[in-house]
Length: 206
Image 1 (cartoon, one colour):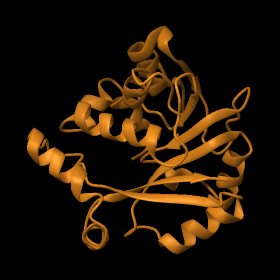
Image 2 (image 1 turned 60 degrees about the horizontal axis):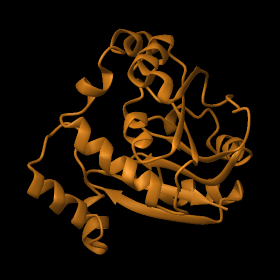
Image 3 (image 1 turned 45 degrees about the vertical axis):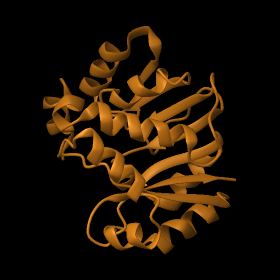
Image 4 (image 1 turned 60 degrees about the vertical axis):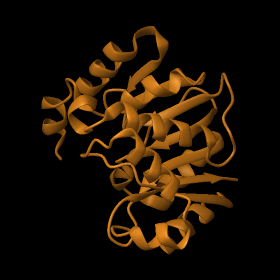
């Protein structure tokens, strides 16, 4: 999608991008907090390519501080409207943005492909991230071994992978959503499913 397309769709981006935004983003927010080193109340999360701040809305309810950054002015405006004084929203490119101080966690969702040099990007993030980097990874798009090697080269020595089976474009009934979350922990079955669909959530820490 081009920058102009993002600009045109900035209004109500979250509501249009997900069939069940509340369920999908709540699960993602829970994993941002719990996967890898756990975040605690008051920790700051830097969300690169934050879009309209839909994830931020769920994170602030979990007690963390949220700083969103996006390269599209219209998305920044939409995120600012959504979150108001509950968060800090800034305009910036994920390859170059530097927060004013260290952050507990950095997240990058549906945007890792915007990293001009993935290994250099991981090193950039490692310089200001204290606890962990969390991002989504499509194993059919990227070779998992190469991504893990890039993370280790950036001194992210501890890496946790979690299959993420919540569909983006289909709203599941509550029992089916609970089953999908349970299947994420099914080991070989989950890894087999990832050959055909869905993504990993990756939590990388030093």
